[in-house]
Image 1 (cartoon, protein in one colour):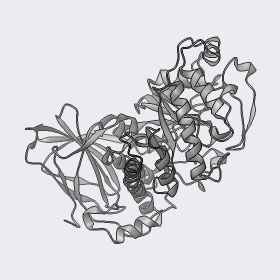
Image 2 (cartoon, protein in one colour):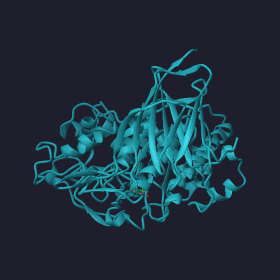
Image 3 (tube, helix red, strand yellow):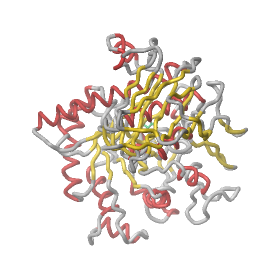
Image 4 (cartoon, protein in one colour):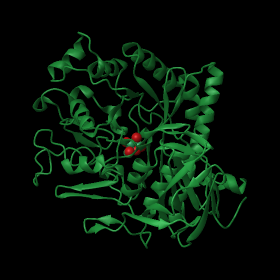
Length: 505
Ligand code: AHR
């Protein structure tokens, strides 16, 4: 049914897949103030850093609230001219190098060991992106040996000499970053990349068969993805895609942007299936969405550190992104918000402290509450029609039936908790001006227990409201509301509703 009055139907029997906690992963690139001045600031004038590691204690504490399971490193575009060897060994001997992605200088004071230590403190797994620009297969093998080998060989011994006897056992390795992009050092054609990545994959898995490999995709809906998947499906574990959504100063464009990511995931799933059929392969390959976020590179250029200052509208866009990942739990198993600190990030620092951006709050709610099994929610909702970026979303929507539309104003995902005693429903009301009262109906075998529902709401009266050094206007408000079978959402609001349930099954 296609309705102007929203209705949500949830049946715990209609499961999609487990939500992989790795969809709440992060990304720390040597870019702008993400590493230097972000997570790492030895000699902070206000004693905010750990005197031994140089890590900003306040930043690590804030990141810990987000339960980040994996950090991707060291880029991004940065990796395509990065020599990992420069970033190990005594710090005073590490060379400064020209840096070609963001046209800066790299001091190499933060390198492999510092990153591994950071991950250890965060209780997160490291994920290394390999340099397929200036880097050779020999360099990549050497880095893998350095990190993972327990043999009596040169690079494993070098790691021991540099103070870490035990291997780091890095599980996730990706084969280059955005190799298709004209901005990339070492840009390649899809066929050339596919052939090269295939050979790299073989060699890397010979050295360490336990690693998981991630191929470099584009947006998921590009011919690059089709060509590279066709060749690489037998040797990879994940296909990476990247999408950034923009607002262009328009709230509707901002919040409808993640619709493209939803479609991209459907297309990528089909491309993976097609490649598997063609290769006669039963290999499990899923998506690693290892760069996603709201980013307008005109507003916040990469060369200037990409320090976006997010507002209430952006918080709703990020919540909509996360709804996509929960709904597509069957195909997306890893997703890394780009990035974790200062650079298009939920956290902004200065030498005096930090503040949490508006986007921090939906991210935290998802990472803590939207875990378990994703449910196939049915939503009838008024639908947006108008400009989208990219414009193909709008064109596809014109031909699509109401229930299938990607641009519903009421955007929902839901999970069944592992204990099967709670259903948590994430609802974004994307409409700038309209509030709605939404009946929420549960399947026949599911009863809501008690007379209240716990609500975590992110809302502020003005879409342009943001957080800053003068305070955080956009935050989570926690409340307990009486449950009457329907819930009223404010205009342009985000909320997670936690229902205690009894499921007879
Ligand atoms: O995350 C910022 C940049 O965006 C990354 O370095 C690059 O991979 C992408 O284009």
